[in-house]
Length: 93
Image (tube, rainbow, N blue to C red; front, side, top):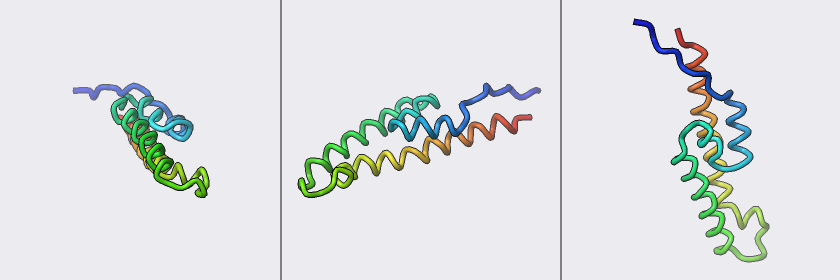
């Protein structure tokens, strides 16, 4: 029985750029909408919380650190999924 041909996925670097531009968009492009929207939601939530729980003397980057941390976690996650799909498509028999 012949294996089903997989459709060509997005190139991993396209997903990487999307994930860097906006949190969660890389996941949404991969078809993982719930995960992507979760990353976007928690990025905004933790950015809001860290902004309001820090003092005005802290730099803007420091005040947004909670959201930036979640965003930074979402980037390699989206790239990893995209890379695995790309390699599976490239190596199909």
